[in-house]
Length: 305
Image (cartoon, rainbow, N blue to C red; front, side, top):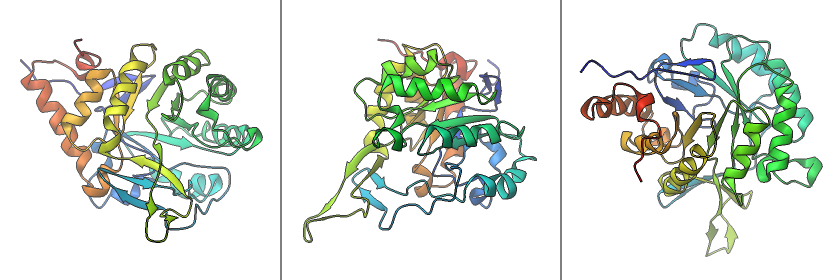
């Protein structure tokens, strides 16, 4: 058979292949240009952008754990104005999908960022981080309930015509219910999972090893949980699902795709091997060829149970 097709068009965006770099691990893209041409990726998701500068949490804020890591960076970024003035112009010449991760403490924060980014053609889509604490609701994350997740999705849908990808938290009772709620409220896709909340204690000092006490667990340790959630959500919604969590090789990515993910994101694996996304792209292509799939779309959700 001929060469298998890796490209797909999803929510109006053309992806050259199904492999994206995940938010928080790829900076704003330019940090990886010394390693490879970012146009080789299917796309990348920027670090979170908030209305104002955020310095992030105090150190220590990254701790290695068995088969993973905990991070409590705190959404450090230079704010929306800096992003638009100094970073966004660099995207004009790219030939890959640029997805901006949006975060905030209030609904107004999200509205501010989405309204501004809606003006810029270089941005392909917006990924909405609803794991952020809603300070108006006592610190509960926007994505902690179906009602709050749907509420912010519905509001942001009126602020932009760009595709909205809702990034779902695994730290909930029923992620399927939340996925259905944001779909009904106008989301174009969902990405999952965000990190699992974890904690590490120094037994000698009997103090938390992160200054923030708790952090987000990522890495291979979370992958089986992520694959399970992707499988459940993909079977419950009609919008595309983007899978992430502990992808360290092509076979890991293939698990997500077979479970129902149209795209995958690679995160902390790039800390170990910066060119990991290119290896995964190659591995997916080789799998399609060797298993007689004509396209990656044909493989999505092909799990046999």
